[in-house]
Length: 423
Image 1 (cartoon, rainbow, N blue to C red):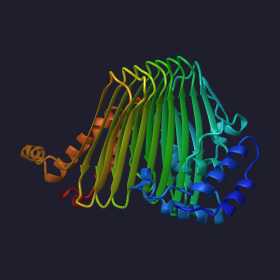
Image 2 (cartoon, one colour):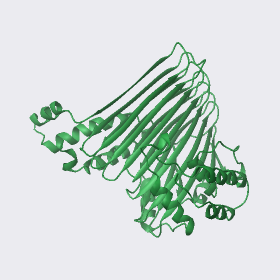
Image 3 (cartoon, rainbow, N blue to C red):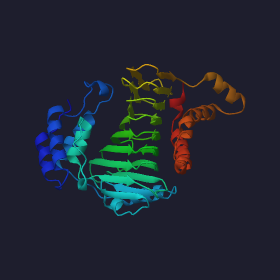
Image 4 (cartoon, rainbow, N blue to C red):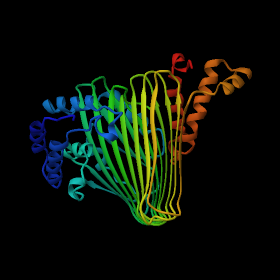
């Protein structure tokens, strides 16, 4: 168990602003007193060691601080907010004030503490989020919302080790649509851990097209949980890109409780020296007919590790379910490791379900072909790696970010050194 100092945690929580979140915070502290943070003895964290995060959390509770945003970070914010025609809500070092001052067509924004949600069934990381949360954001999407909505989350660890919690609830009204971008950045040389919890609820006949981009410093860690409820005849389409971070853990849970609901999710993760990326997905098919598609791709190089555990659960009575999963990985170093586990759990009949996974290296025949056409060895390898990655890029559902994402991906792939591509 990754224990926390519960007395210091409780003292910190008692000093947070009062209001509608008090009951949730107290329940969260009680949960953490019983469970601690996840450890490798927990099955879902078997390959993901959070001990450094636990130590950082204990250290931060000794001297809780929120650093200032540096000039460098301000430049990064300006660069990102200028890349596309997106309505950006900027959350820098956990401060919601800048986001709450925006007035955007078709959107209603308010503090989570003003309309606190029902007490959730807390897991350890969501309990940590709830206990330390100063406030969160509730976004309601109605008629008139047109441009993509961007959540730019920036953490600056230039002055001291940092810990930040983010909670955002988004509701899309029946018959409405939303393009949503999550963009995570961090700067500074001190250690930092970000813990984000998001809820997305889609009303009947609505649609959400979602893109998540994580490009944190390789010194910093992030855990995130996204819970999505898809209403009758509604659709959720998502693509996630993990291009940075020291340790990254993503939990995506999608609930399909009504007939005609659909979810299509794709992901790409790059993991290099000293990096660890863990993706856990769960799609609950509670009735039929419902449809889900999952395809994740990983590129691993240097001394790195990745985990992919994708699960589709077909509940009793969910006849007509159509569920597919796929996970494909390129290992570009003898020191890179992937633990992949697609799962199907089926309690209904008349279903169409399939899953598969591949782990391999670059195709020597394709390399030979490209070299025979005049490319040198490095160019040929990088072209094949990009071709592998671009399958997920093509699935990115927010067109406004595709040019930036393509350029960023090219830059990241160019950093894969020759030694990593030696096999």
